[in-house]
Image 1 (cartoon, rainbow, N blue to C red):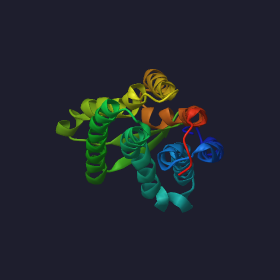
Image 2 (cartoon, rainbow, N blue to C red):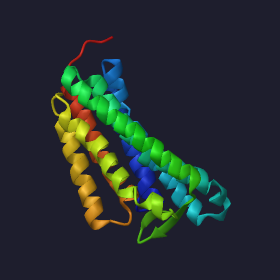
Image 3 (cartoon, rainbow, N blue to C red):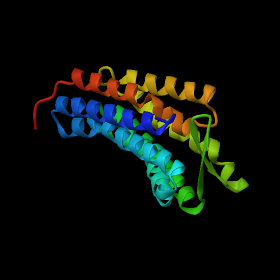
Image 4 (cartoon, one colour):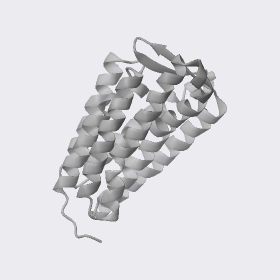
Length: 218
């Protein structure tokens, strides 16, 4: 994961295997989309593993910008949209779907805002204490919005599982919440990277949720 190239590559391999297990259990198109979560985590970890190598190997240094933004697009822009939309597609209750539509709209706003920031301001990756810190030199006006976007990011990724009426889905929200709190408390300078340390646990919860779904084959 975030601790070394080897840890990231190992995590990517495990997550891909978990993704296969989740996909095997999928029976409908919404379920298949939800089951892609471990695969996306696997790609995300692969990108960070390659980024570790590019920071150590001068021959790979030219790949640093591509690998940095690949990781950040998945870690910061993808999840605020993908989590609420996939859970919404699984949901059958109209009232819950309406609430998730609001969360999805907020997620799109968060993703667009982060994309705007990543497009305009360069990111510097700083390895420290076996972690990677993604540093952006933001002007005061943008920095003042950081807390708002952080809260919206957390809400869009964590609230949807709790709102869902699907069996076991709330456990995904609980693991999201606990893992974020752990990263924020013990690794405050490396949250973006360290939070992904819990990708394997989150992915196993996805498989567990999939095993509880009983839908007819499309």
